[in-house]
Length: 409
Image (cartoon, rainbow, N blue to C red; front, side, top):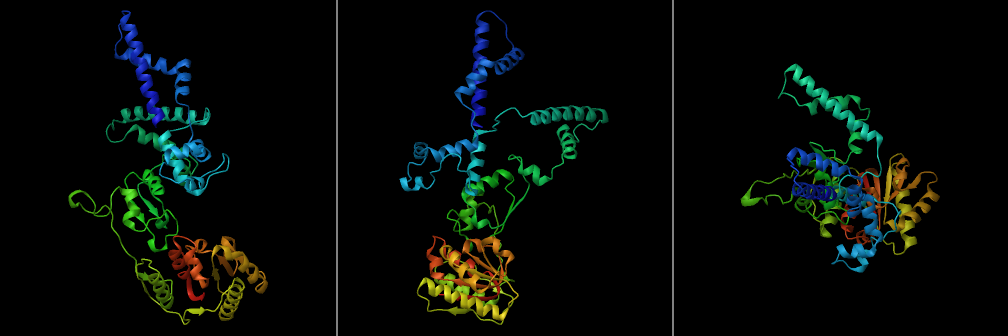
């Protein structure tokens, strides 16, 4: 956007200079002449070269890539960061982008404006067709005498809708300027302030249904409260309007648990409370016949593996047909997969690929949003210590089962 503004300002300045020179030489120039002169200047080859050289076109991808690849650039915009923090972002050009880069790319695209690496014949054709559609619609409105009841742009938009073969989702995905009237956000507790900014651009009305559980937030950039999370979206906290104005959002807490048995809910909430994790207590509508089972006494890596295999064997003796998840610290996943595969040949797999197998071995992060008949949580203390959000990760792991929970401590 800044480059577009710069070009417009430069063209206006050049036009004024030309008009002043012509008037000094006795030429009469009115407003209509100025518009023609401005267009002549805009189309001038020398002027286009000059403006492009003064502010070279830059894509969002190149800007973000350069920020990561040029330490001096990154240092200039992060004066309060430590060298160690900047080193975490160091990345060579061509290394590819991550999911976390998406909001940065969108922000850069918003600031830089539209970038076009070359002439796009299809885009030019669509633009020309749009112009023709509007002209045809204007004539149709005049002929039918319905001025003021419908706009030419609305009718032309209908032409485009019928002509397009893409679905609404496909068109929205291909156009970063696409806006929605209402947006539903699931797992909203994981969003960073930059991700909220991206969503706010997609919904100018700020009409959102936000679903999530702050207690299950595992991302380092996620917020610790809904007030803080939605401040990035709404610009103020709930009830924080000027002179006591009404809240810009309403909180509804869902406290009835239909999935997890009462004994597991109680156990998980007690652990969460004891570790200082703030949760919304819930009421489970049912119990199961199996109490939470604790397996203790393991002191080494091999002990944990053997105890886990035994815990899985005991649970499969109860129900050999249901789904079971072993949720363990990331570093322990591979060793557990190998040991369990030796015991349960062909029934075990790791990560999201394991969801087609009866026995899944997952990290707490990978288990988010999933549910299993039975869960074996391995080394809960190590899960807690693995990250700044370790207490939330443990709470997530313990609330995945619908029937049975075993904890190997």
